Image (cartoon, rainbow, N blue to C red; front, top):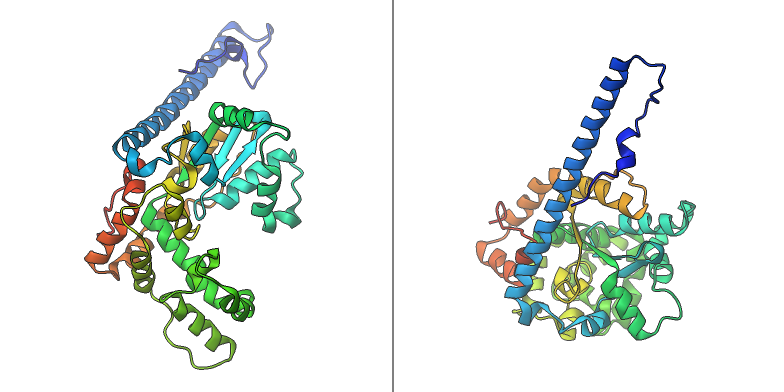
Length: 344
């Protein structure tokens, strides 16, 4: 358990001098002690919460070891491509699409550039983070593995079904309405193959997106937009249950709805801190200062306020589809302590 350094005891905002009356000095010191005790209690509570999340993850990994493990650190690192390194802080963050990854890029890049991260390149933050937040140059494979296991590792998750709705909203419906994507439709549909990552956007379900977008571009009467039910059926048709931590399963999912355990090797690497989008601000307000990263309050409180919207999407699905979706993401549910309450 973290303890309060002795020098903090007299580290008060208002300087105390011998000229102050004795009682005044005692009162100020007592107030300061109360503040430090409150801070210490907060530290204990946060560490307890993170310990509970680690325990939940470990129990789930023990249960699903044969499905959720790539077979060890060396095997997992081949697939774990979303690691972003802050070497001077001995910190690694695994980024998951639709789970605060853009905000994490901002935090980590700002730290990397000592707060001078240019605002004009933030729209390309993911590409920049991939290029600069890397292991130290010149490391041997063995040395990199040693750092990978010894550095503090952080993971952020959210309710798997909430993530699906978010992916549908931004990567399906918004994709069809985007002028930029409209211009790319023709070339996309011509060059795609079944193994190309964007092939996930041309399927029995996504053909509706393409048809809708093409008619919009040509100013023709529009058919109904793709439905969330279409998206759910597509996921169920293309997923091979049970989902296993193998390259074929990894490649079969689009990054925006690939199960968490496939992305970050959670049953092969030890994650000290598991952040949840549902408690994003509280988690990062406590965690970031540990690594000398300045916390900036984000609007992710809306995640909680959006829960009712997520429920509404799932109300459009029959129970049988919801249960089949659960089978795809069951391991994520159990590893990170989520339930289907409100979705079923």
